[in-house]
Length: 361
Ligand code: OSB
Ligand code: MG
Image (cartoon, rainbow, N blue to C red; front, side, top):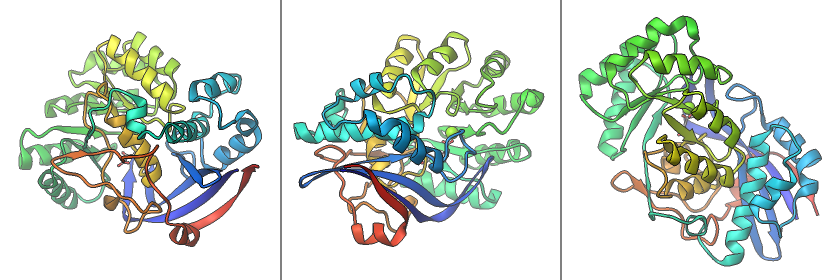
């Protein structure tokens, strides 16, 4: 039986980006039950379409009305992708369904997901994505994160809160591995400000312009020394190919939940490698379920930079999974499995459930 739960769990701290402030993680969790066995997946959407065009409501709608009829637990993920290829867009909904099949398939083989995916190093290199707050608070967070062992610090920037922040971080902490994520907060009219960011020697500048403005990113890439990383713009293998071919990108932030799942993520990693593009695995404040998928993928040897996959405890006082991830020396070891290797705390899940129901018998 295939079911979904929509949950809302409080974040330990508000997470502010250029597109808004998140106080809770509102997630759609998919569960598939076969006898005693349970498999899970998580959609990366939120309540409102601020990051991309999909939201929790469209995900439930698309899964129920368009994807579920193609689902069979006996399908390999790539076969499912072939079957749904006529349905346009909605890669966050597709990604949740596709990842569910990876968990089902890995569990049937009795393998941990990271092993089932192949090429696992056995650990993921971890960076932190720090939400916006006061300059003082952020400087403190950067210091604590370095002490905790994070291998890369990423801060969020927006118009009017960029140069001053980055300059203060460099002044206080020197030549640390630093990047900045604008979440589409700038436009082509901001070239002057964006070029000022070159002085900070960032590892990369993430998604400065609108997700639709691939040409703008190509122009910016010629104007700036700082490598350009794309996040929101890359929602499929096709958009990754387009971005690479049009010279719009140096680094890709791969979120399997955004690009339609793990198969597309692996395919993007391959074309990135062929073209000398660096990749890392991002996050969307996932619960332990989405986090386990991300960390399993992030341990793949084709991933070339630390990702946004902090331990659960950084986001939530309590998570819906009983198992949690710990970071040691800036690395996290993926779950031992089978599959994503996490179980649900149903008592807690019920207490944070907003709605739920059956999708397929
Ligand atoms: O742009 O990477 C992003 C969170 C929500 C939406 C978009 C983004 C983020 C993050 C947080 O940066 C990454 C994480 O810690 O999960
Ligand atoms: Mg981003």
